[in-house]
Length: 514
Image (cartoon, rainbow, N blue to C red):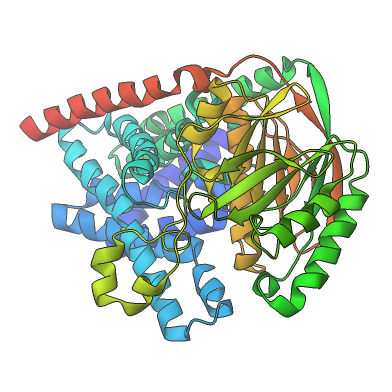
């Protein structure tokens, strides 16, 4: 313990060297650390200090304009690094290099407003006092992440990035999500970065700096101890569901090629047969090379999905009373017994925000097709006495969809997706990590079937019990554990956001009036 303490003290004593570094270096350094901490690079431990450089910049900067500029630079570079896969995705779809690059740059620029906002908040908060600053900044980060999910329901946003997702592989540390959601873990990571910055910026002897930083060690130790205790008292499941996860690994750009339709159908028929007597065969999103409403397609599906001992959940687009991205529960005879329509659609992918306005100036926008969102409250799918909550693709990044279904009685979750759009980039890994947190937050297992991967089973404590490799054609046989009871986050999660909002509002008001 003494060598570790001596090492920390030595590092803090050298913090005066930071004064010689140009301030503009610090925001990009935070961006680099976040990108390296995120899947698929997965250096998650870097996230514990990732916000330190940005926080140090905010503590030292003298003007509101400089704080905003630093946040803009940090946010732009962060999203440029995390969402780089937008470019190859658009290129693979036939979009020109210039337009693909412009799409990535504009998206990163818009999303960077998150870091601008938190930087302005951090600058204003300094007037309330330096000792409380790290704690209030962390609460502000909590609200930032919670708020962008809320904004996505009320308007348009893309809440793909949560700092807590960097910890998906550290099972004990992520157990706090069952109480606070991923937002609480993100706030803890932010706090540790802010405390490191506060200690580095403080004047005084190394021991004083260490004492300022030491709460970060207590936070880390506390989260680890809580997580270990949660894992130790995990009860046995009340039952298991035998499931087969179908991963066909079909080329995304062959799906709607009429010449490929027969080949795709044969692939799905083979995988369905390999599912054997599983109680549930889970097909990926948009698994069919046709509209399920069309008689020929429905007849083929009836033969392919049945007869079986168990049921299937099949992802398909449908026309019905409007075009929907849907999941259909197909019984053992091949008949559609129930369905779920995707509630949260992908902006500019499945619908066009401000279509009338943008279409006046951008001709391709006016030509884009559009799906309709499903009803906010839909019946849960029922299978053999179990209630299944469904999430399609992008919906996996929205905690309220999962907690809402868990509160309504969902026994476990199924997530079907088609990540073939993203090729062999980090996007499929980032997307899979979100499912781990939805499992912990609700204390419900998540079954996931993806066209090209990653498919897998995540238990209610975020442990990946089985998974496939990316671009592998496979049928993954799993036993999904079913648990009773509700998590604290499912029942009371919104209270944390309200408490954080009241605390942040009070301190921000005090800072502005000081």
